[in-house]
Length: 449
Image 1 (cartoon, rainbow, N blue to C red):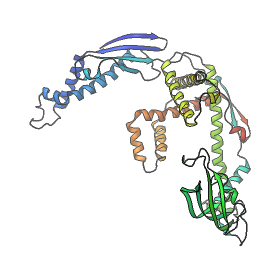
Image 2 (cartoon, rainbow, N blue to C red):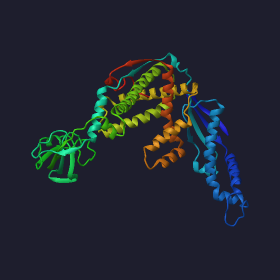
Image 3 (tube, rainbow, N blue to C red):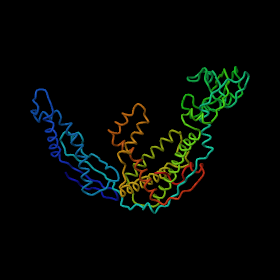
Image 4 (cartoon, rainbow, N blue to C red):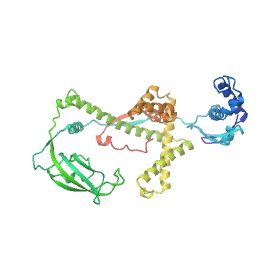
């Protein structure tokens, strides 16, 4: 095997690698000898199949396997022998004709491009000063949650004859919707139970039924939203012919110990405590979002070192594709964003550079402090992912077992969070009590990693 360095600029290393076809052929022979005693072919006793016959039947497939193994092995050796620390997996480009290599007609030649890790000393986490926003769960939020639970459990009783419907009442209705006088699919129902003010129907529909009485018939004029999930209806005006069969009023719901018991909780105080704990978890996540953004901003400002071009380009390409897809989805142009294409590209390239820089910093902090995910932590993540697909859990487990790249994508954010938690625990953190609104506001600072 011959390895020739053809580029050594900045963080980029490129090698041309040549493996003689004779070496590949020798490896093929070794593999064929290994299967000779195992293969069973009609007309031959076990272990007596001629090599020439084995090559004619299996040689091409075995050679393809040998080429793949040789490329990986040669690439790893080129990196290891030069003590390189790749910032990402090496990029491989075959320079020989693949069919000729597999056919044994030519040497295996390919180029390997490696972006190496920049040399830098990450900031000492203990020197960082961070602010953690905290807020108490307001009592009124707990009461509102209880009210919503009560609303979900409420029952309705028919109102007296001639009673007008008000917001919160339930109507039993028949309706048929038409566009330009023509009924449309999904626009008709009978004995439909609608709570006024629930927002179940498109805007304007429920409002026009306020004041109706049992037996009334009413034409409800509405327009489907531009972003309606059915393209055939989006943005179009429609008329619904509605017949009111019954008006029902909501029965009072007592929020007490008996109500809590219906929910499977021993007392109202216990139910309130569970609600507060659930909300507290949401508050905790919001608090963490803020301190993570604050930390990432601090790490970004504390480091300035050359970035691997390949990593930046890959990150920028991913971001730019997402930007173009969003513009197309919203039917917008660059001008609608108030910037030229070049200005937007420059803006998102800075974001790409920030993400790459922060990714390298967090990875280096993790390496220097021997941080890693345990199999138990990774297993919990896979299990959580599997639970998102009820009935397909086994397929999800098998997918991650067979796809190391998918598992790596699942692992990456978990590892980042582990390093972030480590740095926050080491840093000087000041807690600041704020309002609920400030806690749940979009964190200030640059784009997150």
